[in-house]
Image (cartoon, rainbow, N blue to C red; front, top):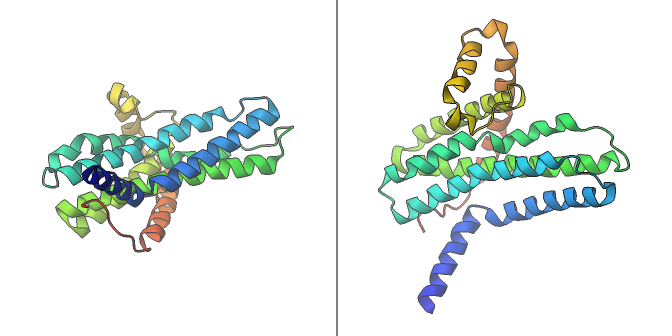
Length: 231
């Protein structure tokens, strides 16, 4: 019984260290606000926010999987390849919710201030799912390759997230398209990267969101936190 209690306590500390509980609360608030809107307005407007929030959880859950495998097998870096690949593929989905403010407009009978608060809650949750998952993955990279490589990894991931936001919002590609239509996705991307003057939006959106996400992440990581990956 004591062993079981100790394991539960360890697992609780692990989840707390990954900020699972505040992320559940934030997600619950976001979905609750949406449910309130459905009840008051009798419409499913903004239903896409719930789906986007689900997708935003995918990189976070992938990072939890990677962290858990690292706790069990701290020397087996190859065991992190699958959860790490899934994390990278789905990572842009978390901050992507920030762009859903594009849909904000007055939609009676719900007051616009309600929609602003609801969208902000979804966007906040997506942003911090991205931040917490990247912190976990950077910590794992640091444990194997050192601090410098881990920061190169983090900044590269944030740049790719900016590119992923552009591809999702303006090219309408989804993360799973990388799994099922990789040649089409890469061909579409290569055409824009090799002709930058013909596609200024590609670089503008990518750099804008990469810079924004980098500042958010650097601000967050400036706060010292206790690492729980090896407990």
